[in-house]
Image (cartoon, rainbow, N blue to C red; front, side, top):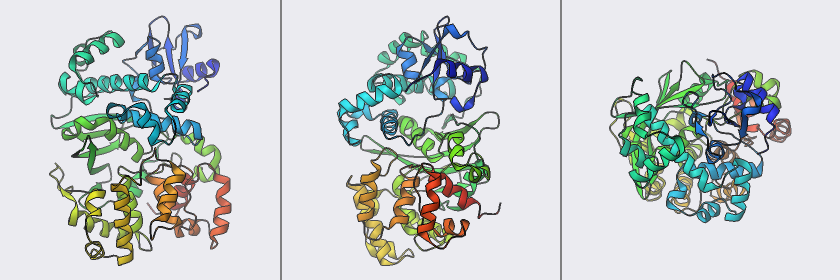
Amino acid sequence: MMLDSVTCYRALRARDARFDGRFFVAVLSTRIYCRPVCTVKPPKFENCRFYPSAAAAEVAGYRPCLRCRPELAPGNASVDATTRVAQAAASLIEDRALDSDRLIGVASSLGITDRHLRRVFGAEFGVSPVEFAQTQRLLLAKRLLTDTSLPVTEVAFASGFGSLRRFNALFRERYRLQPGQLRRRANDKEMPVADALSFELSFRPPYDWPAMRTFLGARAVAGVEIFDGLCYRRTVRVASEGKDHLGWVEIGLSPKKPALHVVVSSSLARVLPPLLGRIKALMDLSCNPAEVASVLGELAQRRPGMRVPGAFDGFEVAVRAIVGQQVTVVAARTIAGRLAVAIGDPIQTPFETLTTVFPSAARVAGVTVGLIAGLGMPAARARTVIALARAVADGDLILTPHADLDATLERLRRLPGVGEWTAQYIAMRALAWPDAFPHTDLGVMKALKEKSARRVLEAGEAWRPWRAYAVMQLWHSLTKE
């Protein structure tokens, strides 16, 4: 990533939120690095060094600012092919893929060589994947020490360190602090209750929270998720090292800063990196709304800060897409709720309405067509659901934001009963593809006052490469709040 020092310094002096997470500024005199939105007095230009990632700043010998907290900076969505590969690798590394696999395995999952991965990763982030992984573990530990009451030993293991000794040594080396010292600095903060962990996940404003509430609330599956008007809550399953971790999450809008306030059950402490990554994808926190608006023009002015809701679980969203073929949103939600009750996992939560975890692909793959069809859908559609589940369970189909887009779309289209609308909808949400465009969607056609899918496709050319955001604008133009 090429950084222009003059432009970066202007953004720093203006505390321009559009650049938050896009670069970090390190100060020679203090040996501290910050986000461009840090509220401290801007340093002199000649004392500044600019880096494309927190990891690059740390490798250069700087420690993170305790005020602006670089670990809270939002991510960066991109449609550039090379950048997207690097970002996908970073997402996998943040999910601790390097803990259980070598770099060659990460590269293989992205369909590239490890040599090419090192090259594009270094160009984007200014460090090697291994250095990036080490910084991510430290920054997560810093966040847990600051924001939770987890014991230091639990913080070390939750952050991905194999031993407390290694964690303590690296923390002292990088941050010139004992972990306990950072914990004491945070003692004056109100800590969350013992059975939950609390976080803040930043975004670049504006963020159309009412639109997100409307979309997710209308599709909330009974027993699995609920949007009560203020907070979105759901049960979750995170698989790690052959074990399923079940729990719940609560997501709301922070009242004081551009961030989402997230609370998660303590049962998920050992899988925090992939858990937080999924929440960021679900809520589209890496979006740069100014970049999207510059392409969508007048369409984006209707709802500034519109996001594309992603997926906490790509399989779940894909099932709901198939279930929703040729039926209303309400009907699809009802059938999905029946599926969850029939073969999902029961769970106890502090919330009376959250009682079930959506079934895994392996569980759905093992049931009969008759059972699925008996929930209220045609047998042909039930066969499609089971075919999807088997493909996901076998590893033949990966429904995550880092999956190969073209290969995944091709594999989806080969499933019986999956047409272009379903494939594009899954790409839009499960794969987080910002240019997905279900041009045959009746809502899109209605909003555009068009009856020809071909003309809708032609109209969409003006919105590349952010057509998924155009779709969200069009859908919401039909709603009444």
